[in-house]
Length: 313
Image 1 (cartoon, rainbow, N blue to C red):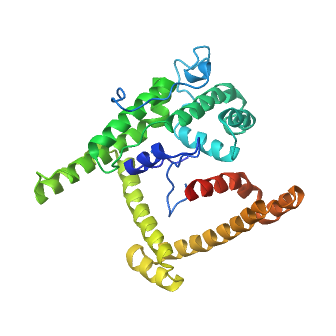
Image 2 (cartoon, rainbow, N blue to C red):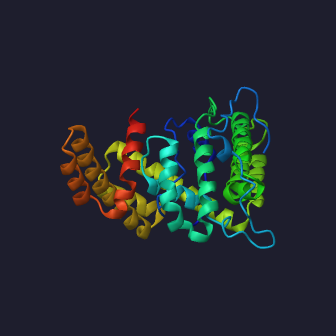
Image 3 (cartoon, helix red, strand yellow):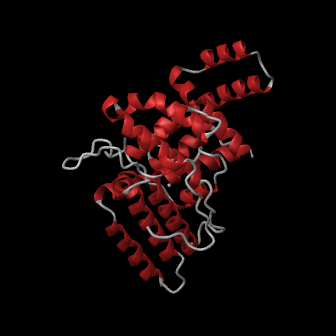
């Protein structure tokens, strides 16, 4: 699966998430889809389940060939599997559910190692939620400290090759975004010095990352505009006109379709949530679930309802 650019502000939001595993990973609008030692004052959660917290030495790994488990898109696959697992009451229940799903996503040959990695990924996500977020998400020094704490935590759960497979692409983008933030917040730079310094940060990215960066900038702009439309109750005609002027007519048409799909999805979620709240008979609730949602939608229904509950509180 295609890697996703994760903004530093989103990384800070991840650390502030209260749910034990529903940690947002960043989703685009136009196309469906955050090293060192921890600084003082940042508490690193200890591994929760002993043996699964450290890479097990007993697992055989290819030595002279590319490891098929540690392929590009590994973290996306793990996140997709968590989403497919749905809303679980605790980490152990989630791990039992992952044991049922891992062979289908990774194949029988990799299932044992993939499950062990997925279990440690769950423990890492639990521990990530215990890290203290920065008080000011736009303060470069505070963000640098929290990113160092996050990376130190990652190294508690994953060996070097796993760390690279899971997080290397995100680290490069984090360094780039942090550098830009430090430049933008530096009061000693003139406008021209700031422009040159910002242009220089682009050289830290490879061509694919620059393309992803450009796409993420567009997606952030689209997302901000859509949020403003939703808050203001902007009508469809005005949305289309403003989107066409800014992003082109084709993009405006796709976004109009996404608006309609989003309204339909949320309306069905509202109906189902009301039925749950009214303590509808379990059989009737199951029938409503089958009638209102496709099998693919049912895989993410519980997670969507849980995310709603988190946003409300």
